[in-house]
Image 1 (cartoon, rainbow, N blue to C red):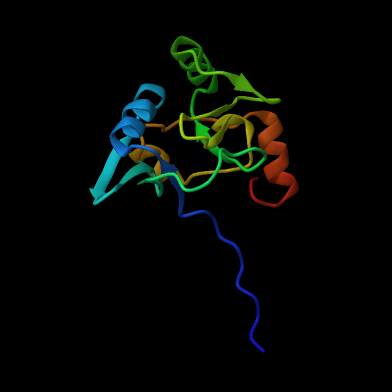
Image 2 (image 1 turned 90 degrees about the vertical axis):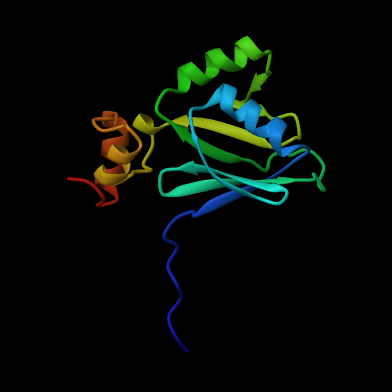
Length: 146
């Protein structure tokens, strides 16, 4: 028997949306991003070395506890933008539903263990984005940071 594969990270998240163009417009009002490309009824939004795949045609009911977390460089800017757009925020942090029922939790890069290489941060125009002491303590406790 061979050993088990180790989890390395998340390559992408796929979201079902009612309309890809509407989804791109909404996400474009909330976040700065580059469109990786489109194929048929799908669009791909770059997040450095990861991406979101938007697929037209919602087949599931709205999310309840199921969600995914998006990491941003300015969580409070997203909070303000959601408020301006009249999108209801809920939960302990910054959670919201998009119009198709996808539950999204927004977290700030500075406050979590998730890290990007200096090269990826540079390519995203985020060079110098620093971690909080709490996040650094969590990384040190796991042997990930000095």
